[in-house]
Length: 443
Image (tube, rainbow, N blue to C red; front, side):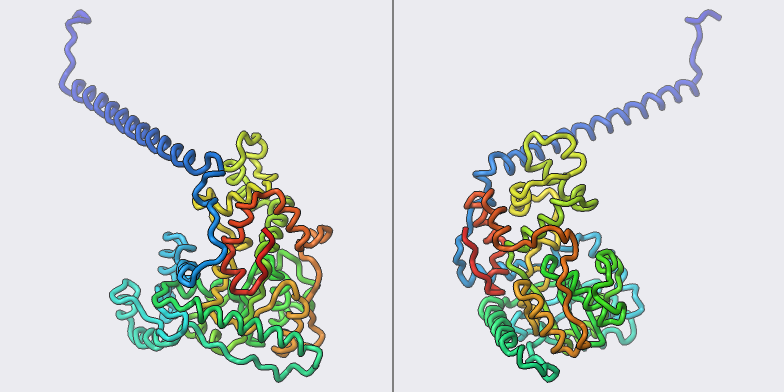
């Protein structure tokens, strides 16, 4: 038979058609994906050009009036919704873990409360969490019991019966003024009728020391490393604060946090333990965080934050900087901080204290300041009945050869910024300045 006389049988025809059909389908799918990627890339490029071009006319660089109305301050407080700090997938995963726990009272749920403490914690009607609770014998009764507890917890007088030394008289007077000022501020500006929050997130930065009944809210760059050393000594985990390394403090997981307890445990401690927060001038804290994380080798902040900051805010960045993320400039860091479309999220080291510790939701019994850290801390230790030999350590946790960040150091960093940028940093930390009665910086 001649080659041109060969005829394909039906099986061969079917296979040929099938192969060509599959190839065509794959080609179509590839083209569809390619077209969508090109379109998305163009949209993203236009958006970035709109956001980053020029830096001068950017919307977020418009100064906010330094004096805000009561309504505006209340809006700032209202917008502190902790649920936005927790990604959806993480929140769902955590809720599932909580629901599967044997302790049925520990439920991550939205709550509704008045910052004045007049409205009870209430459950969400018809929510999946509530339905799950109803299926379990006795759990609904337990949940309702804690739903009726008031939030926030009331402030109560400090127990000063253990303070024997008269040298603390001035410190005590200053402390009472701080507490009173914060309480009056929250009464005036913090009465928001229906503030939604996740209870477990709200208390997630609070460390627990059960022996001396202490709750300490961690504010990074305000003496928190040494405070955690003190808590470890009080817990019996170490004999001296001076023998505990930086890694043991921050990565050892020796201390309990308040969100590790069930609802009963959280409310009992909030209502009976002495709650302390230590704060710092916002500008000083910001500069201190920048110096610590970006001016020294760091295996986390350089690749995670540094690379993203340099890529977005440094025109014509060299390849080395884009690869390792080292050498971030303070001005670039400020552009990132003030950008409403940050290429990487916020971090606790420069997050506002009002969003870390929620001082208008949790009535702190003791308000210490970094500017008077040793004096405040040692007075607090005597007040809670700590061993007499235990004193607050005064050493610098890391980079001990560096000068401490103070007002003079801050001025050196701020001089490289425009007046608008300095004003916007103040506006960013506006609530912290007001709540803790810090002097408005010279801008």
